[in-house]
Image (cartoon, rainbow, N blue to C red; front, top):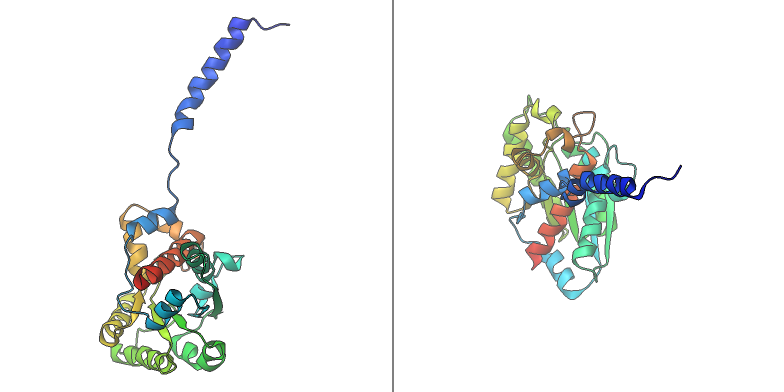
Amino acid sequence: MMVPFRSLLACLCSVILLCAPAMGRVPEPSPAEQCLAANEGLSLGAALPRTAGILKNGAPLRVVAIGSSSTVGLWMTREEDTYPGVMRRELVRLVPSLQVEIFNAGRNGDTIPGNIARFDRDVFAHHPDLVIWQIGGNDFTWGEEAASLMQKIASGIALLRAQGIDVILMDQQYTPVILGTQYAKMQGAIATVVREHQVAYLPRFDMLHKAVQSGVSIMSLTSLDGLHMSGEAYDCVGRALARAIVAGVK
């Protein structure tokens, strides 16, 4: 049976009117984008002289990311979705001529002393220009004095700097499980070392906290285990770190 032209035209007009609001709607920014917006202009707070020289001269940049499961990128199925992988992609986007090689030396469950014990094999063997040292998530600080924590962190920084390597410290993640611990003791120890030793610092805990304060759901930045970061949080951290490195050099 033939549909009258006027009826068909009326149906088409109705469909267009129903779809028009959706077609004109601006997509909601992803949690990663909102996290980046909440942390726009982030500074690492200290110079990276070796990295700056390399980026200005166009030489290859070698980076080692060492830490625990946050560096491994637990629950991410692809290396490029971990924070070191995201950071590499963003660095190349920002500086297209840059040749950068990143070695992921994360180990699930590792601690500050465990990281330091691996420096010879997993850091110095790669002859890096820059090391990003993610610490704090697995160090049980309940019975340990803050001075002891600071001494451990400072000793690791001294070992890295003795090799002429630029260092960026990265602290704990802002997730429900971490918030249920005595996280403040570790955060305080890291902040004191950063201040006293003038170390470049990515304040991951505060970054993700700011994102939550800006309206991002903490669960969108957290994996299902309540401890590790989600893909959105890895994306935010990796891109924010790359942007801060490049901004610091410029």
